[in-house]
Structures are given as C-alpha cells and as structure tokens.
Amino acid sequence: MVLAVFGMGFSGGDTAFVRTISDVFGLEALGAITGLLALGWRSGAAVGPVFAGFVYDATGSYAVPFSLAPVALLLSLVLFSWGSASRRSASSA
Image (cartoon, rainbow, N blue to C red):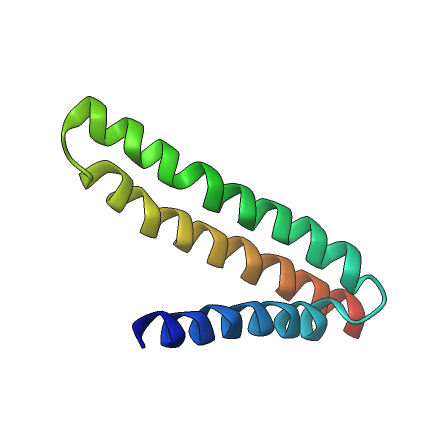
C-alpha cells in the first residue's frame, strides 16, 4: 500500500515537472528542455545517494548530505525562478 501511494506521488511529480516547463517555456522546445532538465535531475538522483554513502563511510553521519540537500533545493528554486522570470519578461517585451 505504501509503495502504491509513493508511486502515485512520484509520478505526479513527473507530470507537474512537464506541465511547469510547458507553462514557463512554451511548447516549441518542450522535448529538448524536458530532456536536458531530466538529465540533470536523474544524474543527481544517481550520484546523490552514492555521495551520501561515501560521506557516511568517512564521517559516520548523514549530517552533511542531509544539510546539503535543502541547500541544493533552495539553489534550484532560485535558479528556476530567476530563469522563468527572465523568460516571462522577455516574452512580454
């Protein structure tokens, strides 16, 4: 039951991801932009746990990776907001 709920939530994130990209950048280059952003997203999903494991092995604690995760999230929020704001101002000009 837990995995079913997790799966629905995770796939909902993918849907919101594509919808947000189409709202911000339009449909002209949706495939290219989605592919590029998904490459970064999936690369982070592959490298992040390995990095956290190395840090845990070295320090005996997950404090550093758990502290860096919200920082990375906030950085991505700022960069996305900055990019989407500049995109909106360019399209309205």
